[in-house]
Length: 445
Image 1: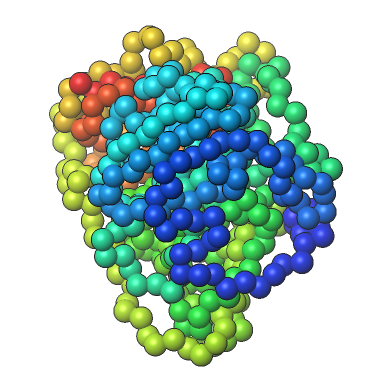
Image 2: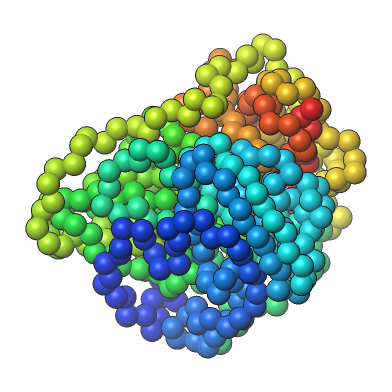
């Protein structure tokens, strides 16, 4: 269990000022090579080193590029397991979706693979391993990152910060707890005991201009930990969800749900007096601070009023629900019961089986997601963005998603236009459940 005392044990929080481009592991232009390899890093200040897997020697690597720019990324696999990289939320070509054993062959140890594509949208996207039956361990060893595609005219801010939240299952000496095949037929997922922000201990503390404005790009890279985020002493406005622009709004009760795979872009206006503090909190237990912000220096000149990002005109204005292909998606499974594995419509995922649904390009689809389990189920649809429908099928929420939370013993419905040809996963973002078969796929021709 993560506790505030455990997080802060032995940690003297430092006050740092961040450069415009953000954290040290960020790149100002696309990194053209990812070398995934093992190596020791000290995660906990009060414990020994942890044998982690990194991209290019760093945890929480951030790749920055511009919308409309071609990405050329080479994955070199120097780990002991097969890998492939999924760009979570990117509506790119199916061949570059990075699902090992579905859209590409996994990259064997000692081999490499070239990803080359032009993402259509600006936004904040996850980079994570995705191999059918083998994703959880590589991610929990540290192989995750962020792909940030900047708008042509981004909002004016003093800092643009990429914030990747993860948890780690560690022994008292700092080593990773063993990775074992769970005896449970429906593994609940690996919950960590140590929380990190950009691969470093929490809380991290930054200095920002008095009266300034920050852009926070928050992403949940945990294997199984869903939480809520709360913004204490901060005036936060959501401007994008799962990488797609939304009407600007203040979070209800200053908090947001934050499941594995979820991302938020926020603008935060800071206090007009120096020395004011605020915090981004993970609501785990009594609450754990992830990021602490303190204002310093003279008050900066006033910034323009906060305004929404331009709408993504590449997404459909209307989804014709009356013409939609409709399909039920029933999730079952119980980690506490023997012989009750995770299933969708009675079966575990099979790449060689029939797709959940097969439609022609441009067809509207409505999926009714029924969770008949005692666990919240976060599901990610590859290659598309979806609308969350109202209960009476008379409209949808005013934002786009690619990662949907289905509460325990509840039903939600999503709608989208299947405008991206290929084979696309609908899969649990709790990667142990994904590895155990909690996924299906759709085909767009």
